[in-house]
Image (cartoon, rainbow, N blue to C red):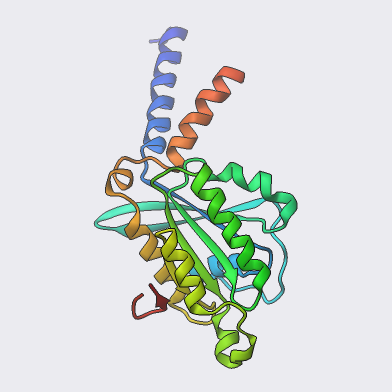
Length: 227
């Protein structure tokens, strides 16, 4: 029996919609990393994803997304991790990634005072433009350099911790040579995501749904120094 063209289209549309819905309702957390250039964001993500950490620093242009699936409380979560450019000329572009973000990791280099100033700017920006229930982590990176030679430290631990406390955010000092630091930071911040967000399948999926509509219309624990 030859199916009528309308029937074929109906079956196709039904199948297509099911595929779209199955993707949209996937539990997704959108995570953005912010910070001045050369603070170690890309290497930090690589460490978390168990990739080789690049030996040579290559500045991120615009933003780059990586994905990772994890098990959390008997639920599979898809993490969309956005590595944003630290150069000032990309500041306005970076702000576009705040939308529908669930976690923001603001990173600075504890040996570089300017990077801490930029971290403060990012914190203020996130507070104004990101979702109100976003989980924020302030991360002082490259602690290994200060351990090797304390005179290299420009930002005291207490100063970073105090700033994080003022803004009621998670705080840690890390280095990419500690295998557990990145895992510890990501895990701790995922724990801070409100349960109603975690199990409502929002985040990046909500942004995806918005994009579909728009397109149709327009065509401190043991593993690291954490507090």
